[in-house]
Length: 191
Image (cartoon, rainbow, N blue to C red; front, top):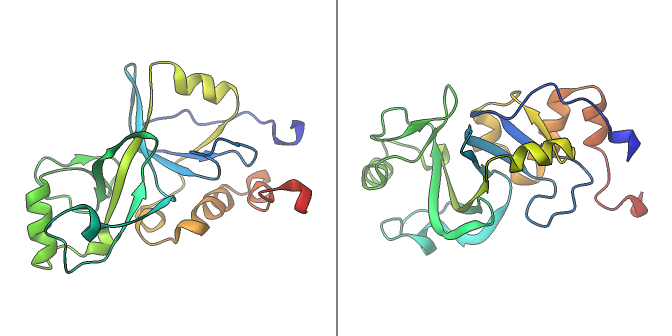
């Protein structure tokens, strides 16, 4: 894997994305993009942005019977919990992750705002479960070169890019050798 060796210039931080290395074989994280919502001495936490589940929001939560929105697998931890990212800066109790992306907030208020069309459902992304790392765990994975850290993304990537294109688009946005990585086949034997 010498071809892929490089010095990652960015460290993980809240509001940055983790882009999995092309050779990462973990079934939970192969070819994924994770938005870090928290990164501190207590550990790290985020959501896989490009792994849709088989569920739709109306299958998961009452009050969305008239809406269709995919629910994504946020990660392997507590997949019986529902989380969401959104662009609504005024949602009570929401936590700002980037300039224009927020996590959580008052769920009843969110449902009301969606049902009354004050928030476009396209500006909300739902997740079952999350991705979490205990203190030092992500640092170890960074030393193993499992992740590329990037801050070259925006809400368009999170809310508008089709899941199948996110990984490739994230690498291409970094340019240089990362553009080459984006073309790396899932199975090199099929090249």
